[in-house]
Length: 298
Ligand SMILES: NC(=O)c1ccc[n+]([C@@H]2O[C@H](COP(=O)([O-])OP(=O)(O)OC[C@H]3O[C@@H](n4cnc5c(N)ncnc54)[C@H](O)[C@@H]3O)[C@@H](O)[C@H]2O)c1
Ligand SMILES: [Zn+2]
Image (cartoon, rainbow, N blue to C red):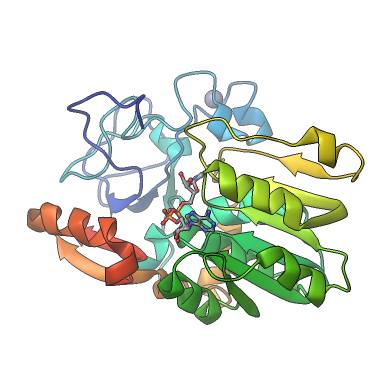
């Protein structure tokens, strides 16, 4: 992320204990066990009042590990703490709650809700990293008829099956377009969710959607991706983009509490805070290490 300055403490996913609360904090006390959301929100600006915390006008949004020091540290200062954290209910472990800091609400809000997944839909998910797997997890809540997972890595496709994909396609070997056409009587996917963030995956997601279908882009794009309007203008498609708001955390927390979402299955590695280098190495070589989420703890 070129926007992040050198020296910034990274990290925007954390669970911790409140040590101290500033004067403006009303609802949290020292000792509370909280989830620190990847999105901070002032709670009162125009967008926060629409629960669109990602777009906060008062210095919130995605700021942790970006514009202010982040969570890969022993202590973290969380701004607007009342509206940027969630108290963790008894019965939900720290590690389960941690998956709600970013990936689960991202897949659910920016993928499943923005894409309008409905019962019976054929859902294509391009990219099966933690975010794509979260989109699969969220889509399952709506009883789709088929979930088709696409990735270049067999390890990630194996994970996609564990998370509930019905069909997996390795697009380094197979053509996902012919797979989806065969599955749907040549129609295409009702909803195509893009969870990679490169031009090829966006263009693929657009092509996988049927006429009248919806394409939900989750990926964070660092370079221009082409929307081929010369082909797409005629196909009645809807494309959505978005930054997660984490407004769905209470809902998803409830589904973890009742066992309808298994947050534990995202966690493949546990590493101590003193072994950061190892953690980065494991994460960087995800294709070999089969890493999904690496939990760092004290
Ligand atoms: N919109 C938001 O609010 C938001 C929030 C969090 C993350 N994100 C973004 O979501 C994206 C996914 O995050 P992640 O943590 O799962 O990343 P990840 O890198 O772990 O996963 C990406 C997956 O895409 C696969 N891939 C790469 N190129 C591909 C291609 N051409 N076709 C099919 N698969 C391909 C990779 O093998 C990998 O499994 C990233 O761009 C991330 O920045 C967006
Ligand atoms: Zn705000």
